[in-house]
Image (cartoon, rainbow, N blue to C red; front, side):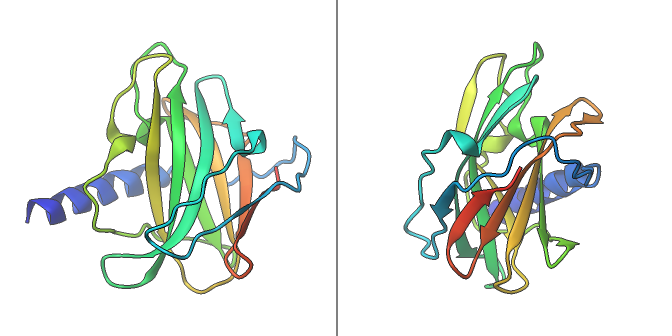
Length: 179
């Protein structure tokens, strides 16, 4: 019962933070051909070794470490986003507060997936200069069409106007940074 309550609480917190995420997609960066594999097996997690999978901003650094398709709590396909977060602000903050990750599939914002996990690294507060790896977000997949992730820096109540954009192609198992 505690696990279910923890998952529900975490989902509500993540959902409430996602409400404020902007979808401004003004292009201020160049396209890239960097690609990585998407794993479809729960036991395997891909590692991304490309500098192009990093968003380095004033208050935080985000690094996309991998993505994989898993099953959510109801048995639906879900996309697991694995990332590393570094706090660069004076105040302690967590990845949950310091970065916003919006997932879109078929032009619609994706639902947050509820998964069976005891890991909530993205909720750990970090002092300036401290890094937390193995942070995760989960989204319900509606089908096997491509997913677009928009990653924003957050700074209190302000949202960055310059997101990093990652295209995840579920069919050919690749991730490409497009902005």
